[in-house]
Picture 1 (tube, rainbow, N blue to C red):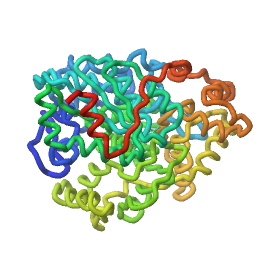
Picture 2: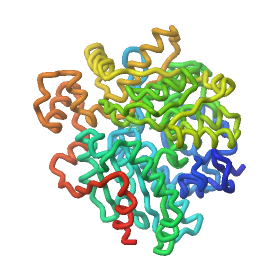
Picture 3: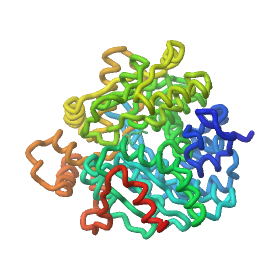
Length: 495
Ligand SMILES: *Cc1c(COP(=O)(O)O)cnc(C)c1O
């Protein structure tokens, strides 16, 4: 059965999966969602005997129904290869009785690689299927990790250009160095004077600029998005939840049909939404535990039903979650509105205008699958230290937010179900904050020396992604004001 995608705001025509991937965002500013969430058509036992790539096919085929089997398998093979430093792609590590699902074994050592290593292939295949001859221009706002992962995915890919905007003072030194050393004639990296929300808002504005779109079309360009609102990112993220469950089953850690909890350190709400989709496909997940840092807009929303971004933006030690506008939440709002696009549209209009909205009691009641809490920076650092002292396992700051929130959840509820914690970055990506938590005496060292110290402490080799930037030349040194982003795009494209 063909799955079609329509907008959460009700505008535009339904489109195929490949069209939705190419467009990124619907014309009315809404997000694409499938008409219904498909059910898994393989048993957990069958899935447990499969490789990551095979599970990826079984999950993704249900959503990307206009891709042929060969096309999809080809994309999967090209994505999940030696770029990952482990054959299982997403290993599980047990610590303090929870299972850390390590999503950071790809090229840029953050979980964004899980989807962004396949997105370029999905997009090029989609372009071919839709007879697109324009060059595709990927425009991306990043809180640090998407940027590098998208650059790594698209650099040197014929028929594409990629432009990345990041908050100049809102990413870790290693994140910044990873981006500004990116090679490839088709890449541009720009630091903006503003925060992530400014970058994201700027990108959305450029996307909806019809005059610019027309001018680009005449020059043979069209925009697409590598941001987490693209269903080409959401769908590959569902895979690892299914895979993790199947592995736990295979290893005899859970029984047939046993429900587990999932904890996700959350920013733009993409990763946890993928877990929600997995649950609605039939995967036995009980609670979805949404972990925030000091930018706890989602915690407040889940506890009060009021979403309010009118608050100070806090720069924390988990910068990839420093977000006040969680774009993917719109898909959940649509869901709890019972598929009422007008209701969703009205709330999003209110968010754009007043920075705030409140859902109805009815809608709030449908959020019971979710539990939200947050961890302060101090709690985050304490968690890194405690886990290391307890079992020698070192986690990054984002994962530590999740781990700290999980502890609060267990204390509050006594729920002892087996739990998977999404481990979204390697500790080497946030070395300084991790080392400050572990050993305050070394912090006068540079970031790369700190990585060597961390390697000794954690007894883990320094990842290739860090070795690569040690002596890498800085290629991109552009900066701009947030209101000049459009001009930067025009100059890069020569239009
Ligand atoms: C992007 C990111 C997150 C947040 O994921 P969302 O899908 O935006 O909620 C968490 N941790 C790390 C390390 C990330 O890069």
